[in-house]
Length: 252
Picture: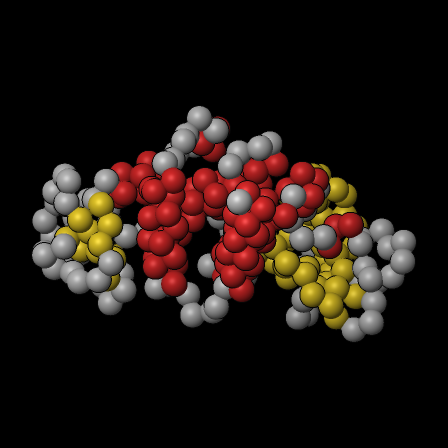
């Protein structure tokens, strides 16, 4: 196979032998790609910066037998302010983890690439990190086809009544009315936030304000939806929770 060039966002990296690194990228044209950056751990390596998580770069890559090999890289955007702020950083790491866990290698999705990078730009330019992350979760599930129906009960099929309650049923992977489901109930109005965020363009998110109560409910509902699809434990979500507790402590 011939060498190729790709714009790629670094989801994560890990060490390989003494001097090399494996970089997991989400690329515009080829989806998720794992590639070796040889010598990237060495002092003054030209590839070191392009291995940093949460950066966007242009790569020249040669296909390999087991892993592709990065031969050159040029920085596109480092997202300096995201990486310099602990809260923004924690949320960004969590979003990168979600993108990694929800995608398979070499399954390109240009809409997903635009969503991953678009949320990074929103966070970089000051949009509330929690709002960006709820947006990221809902749109990610929508793009990949995992977002539950928010119009009808997954058990009886009836439309949700205005002013009622809904319950997420892991066994059905969807929302049920309070008559059909037991467990923690959420106001049905919360589903309008999910629909709105799932359909929203990134530029319009800047003008959106979500009340604190709705934010808390959205976080719980998205956690249930995501955990229903994943078997892996998200340590980055625990990191987000720790940072939030630290921030609340400082505020008090």
